[in-house]
Image 1 (tube, rainbow over the protein chains, first blue to last red):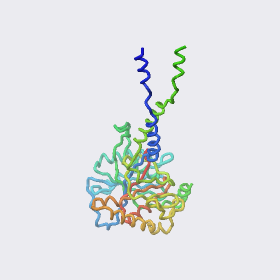
Image 2 (image 1 turned 120 degrees about the vertical axis):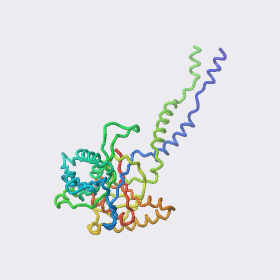
Image 3 (image 1 turned 135 degrees about the horizontal axis):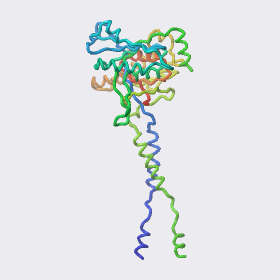
Image 4 (image 1 turned 180 degrees about the vertical axis):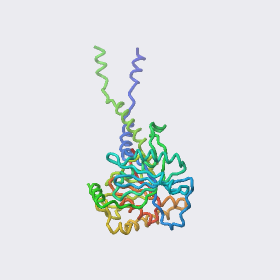
Length: 189
Length: 161
């Protein structure tokens, strides 16, 4: 009976106060350095200023897609050394706006088909109208860079198939005056 | 009666175990989300980044931010914008002269601090932070100014969906 009493007296609680002190110090420090957002990058370029004669000759197995973005439609044209004018015309496509915005799904499906025909191609040249907003530009870039597939990979990221990941920005194309004014007004709000 | 007396002797202690459990969970969450690579990058609070499905991991470079009020290089204002629009003379000249000057100075400093040419080629990259409502003509104007200053590659900073 005495032994049992002794045992109960020895089973005291562990002093957790030093551990709590450590936690209280560590948590504010980590809170300051914590990132509650996830950033990403979209690598892009614009054409370098080189004379036309110095440009490298295009290969016949690659095509370059030019994506002209207008306020009411997106026009895709294709160029490549192995393509004659009739062939390039046959591959061109126009995607009028659907609903509130551009028909990005139709454009992605079409680019997926082009990628199937010319698997080594990876470059798209952008020629947007000058009032296009940055958010809309990024949405169109996403639609040309990869096609989203159903399901997720091992890291929990959505599955996707690369289309034309190399992006080159071309000069701006001035929209008609009344459209440019409207767009500037909307952006200013 | 004896049993009652014994109970009274015991001091009631503060239950720290559940609090400690909570702190441990918070600590693990914070350690996981602590990203030491992003420490040199400062997100500009005057702009809202666009959302994107981009999977490319974030990598810092020369920081150029375009807000509705101006252009900042490494968080220093170098040019003013009026609601995201530059001066008409800048669009005509297809460059912002103050931005070109600032970027040339930045590039000279960045190239001088590296030793090999391979490292130098990594220095002429601009990381662009721009407001989601910014018009393409201003974005292109800034990119073209950067090209004139010697930066020929760009990373558009976006918020992952």
